[in-house]
Length: 271
Image (cartoon, rainbow, N blue to C red; front, side):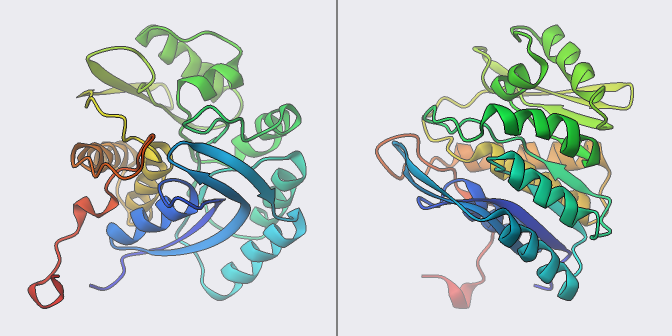
C-alpha cells in the first residue's frame, strides 16, 4: 500500500505501547500514512500507571522537529504531551519555521491512572502561546475543566466550555465526552459557530488506555489526506470505537485498544 500522507507527531513515549507516541505511530500507520516523531519525554509506565517521567531537553525537541521537517515535509502535525513551559516555547518556535496549517493539539494533562503529566506554569503557556496556533484541539472533559476553570456535567456545559476554549484563539474544538457517566458518549465539535454532536453507545470495558492519543492521531491522518474536519472527526471516532470494541485485554490494569482493527492482512503475510 502506498502511503497517503506524512505526519509529524510531537509527544511523549509510553513504554507500555498503548498511548503516547507508540499509539500515534500505530494509528497513523494503520490508517495508511507515514509517521515521523519528535519525542518530548520518556515515561516508565504500564497498564497500572506511570512510574516515572524523564524529560527531553527542550532544545533537542526543537531540533527533532526542524531536522525532520527539513528533510520530509509533513502534511499535518499532531501534538500530544508537552510537560513544561520551556518545552512549549521550543515547540512554538520550531513550528514558526515549519509551514503546516493543519496542527492538531491534544492537550494531554492527566494519564489514565490519574498521574498529572503537565505543571501549572505549562498550562498557562499552553493557553497563551500554543492553542491559538492549532487548527483543532481535542481535550477530554477533565482537560477542558482545567483549561476553562468550569465544571462540566451536561451536554450544554460541554458546548459552553468549547466556546470558552474557542476564545483562546483556536477555530475548532472537539470536546470528548467519554468521562461523563451515561449510556451514550456525546462528543462535541465546535467549528466556527457550528455545533455538531457525535453520539455513540458507550462500550463497557476497562481497556481504554490511549484512546485520546489515538483519536487525535486518527483525525490528523484523515485531515492530512484532504478530508473535511467534520468527516475526519466522524471517521476518527469510528476507528477508536472499533479499536475499543475488539477489546484485546492486554495487561492487568487499563489495557490498550486494538490499533490494528482497520488492517486487513493479505494472505501471504498471515500467521
